[in-house]
Length: 360
Image (cartoon, rainbow, N blue to C red; front, side, top):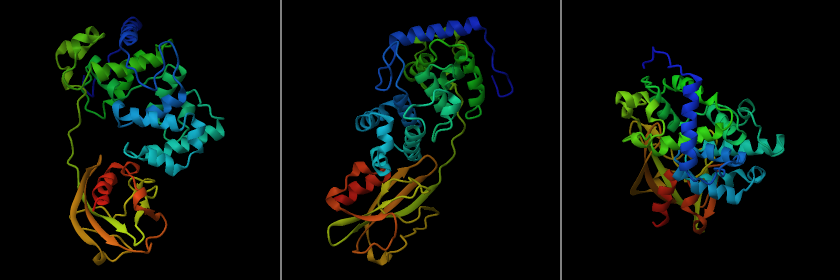
């Protein structure tokens, strides 16, 4: 199937057979995940929402310890809403894509204040909440409220692209994949949440990007790509673009009282809201931009550096060390006792620097 071809239309009989095969397989092979309800039960909307936000651009194994940490610390959405934002951001440190954490806290506050701690139960109403878009609202509505919504994450995209042999390169393929998937989801009114989770599990365990285990797949007979022998090539990925490289300076500034200068980054900055070490501008072209407000001559180049790869660029930060007893940098900067600085409270790029600097 190409971009010019229409999605194959299937009958209700074929749709029902596919759904039945998937649900039967799910009942026998479902993953045990902390936020997932027991068989025959509906998941807690708070748990579904929290896990779906955390799982955006992040794998399930990486999310599990964060989910457990959040639900142990804040068992209800009202507890999360009442927490200080800085505390939420610190608990999120290391999970990445930090706008998710800022929106998470805003969303919890709105649910607590405007909805009495109860999540709205429709896709349309859920989309009115901060940080909840088309996919997340569909997932919450289906899994937590048993609504017949079309849920398509990365795993499901792969399953559907192969079932319907969709060759349109990503991300353009997202639309025809969703149209194809709707033929299953819109017709499943009994267990829509389980159908969504069954397809997620199938993509994770069987219909994998490489070496799919087609012989074990419960819906292999209806898979058009398997029939044609091109399943490993789908979905078609767009050509990778070369990422730009940025260079910057990062500073370990100590006071005479054993304190270290830290920075709470602004919401509109990269890694906004997160705890950090002070840095200069991150710029392309090899030009090093030092920190405004301090004389760069007062700093020693440690000869150390860290490297980090973001989604859209690679970064190298050169580490400088210096001493000062004044905060000339303004709001957002503060002195913190060196002994109280924990690497785990920082996002990964700064955690790397803190680990190196803390022992200098």
